[in-house]
Amino acid sequence: MSGQNVLLSMSNISLSFKGVKAITDISFNVNQGEICSLIGPNGAGKSSLLNVINGVYQPDVGQITFDGETRTKMKPHDAAVKGVARTFQNIALFKGMSVLDNVLTGRNLKVQTHWVQQALNSRSSVKDSLIQRKKAEEVIEFLQIQQWRNHLVSSLPYGLQKRVELARALAAEPKLLLLDEPMAGMNKDEKREMSQFILDTKKEFGTTIVLIEHDIGVVMSLSDHVVVLDYGKKIGDGTPDEVRVNPEVLAAYLGTKH
Ligand SMILES: Nc1ncnc2c1ncn2[C@@H]1O[C@H](COP(=O)(O)OP(=O)(O)OP(=O)(O)O)[C@@H](O)[C@H]1O
Picture 1 (spheres, protein in one colour):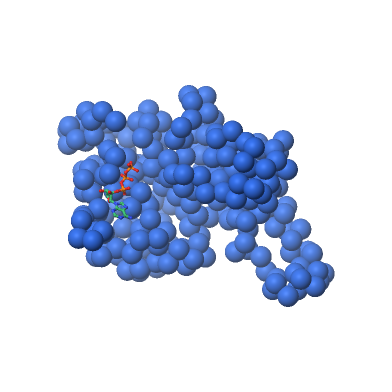
Picture 2 (cartoon, helix red, strand yellow):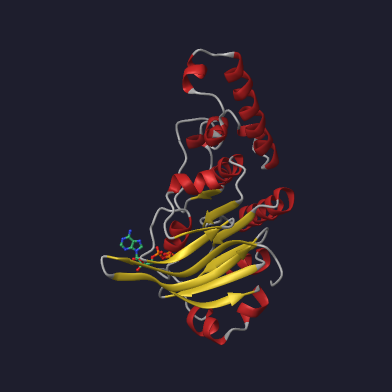
């Protein structure tokens, strides 16, 4: 993994909640265009780390370098503006809105016209909304959810809702896509399908992806890079083949029943 461009660098990140350590001195790099999986037992600190990357949590110690810019703190809005998009463990969509309208919310930061122009339905705002809609439709087609584009999200099965959430994140054209358990609760076929969409996203758009996943089979087949956490500490970092034979990982994680 050397010689490649680093998009995200986490340096000595520590985070605690009311004195209880969730993450202790974690450092790792994510290269441009790779799929990096964060794995580890329940409570290992994976979601907390994802929340540090997109600024939901501010680390007590450490630095984050994203796309060449180093910060100790990142606000969620800044992260979004800089090109970080994410999906959530518990789907965070507008359930009473259509698939298309949800995906369009992913374009919010790309809207060029002021709300006054939109309210007046000016020519530039009409043109702008056509551009946003075209992009949303492209993503809908890419993820093969056209037939549900006008359906309410609440009417869709869980696996499809997960795909709509991915569509909304992709509509933002992110440089870095964070996926928190994108395949949780899915059956084998749905997992295979979602894995393929994630691989296609990397291939088609060159998007760098950091994901959390519990299914080790999926992780090993999907990832270029795996970071293993246990009790808030990093215990493994390498290719799937390197991590698979790491004795500390085998002892602490792969031998653990979930
Ligand atoms: N908002 C919070 N307030 C207090 N403690 C928290 C908070 N979020 C996480 N923690 C604690 O931090 C530790 C790491 O939790 P985190 O959710 O990051 O782990 P995880 O690896 O994502 O677990 P899981 O696989 O169960 O989602 C746990 O001990 C958890 O209880």
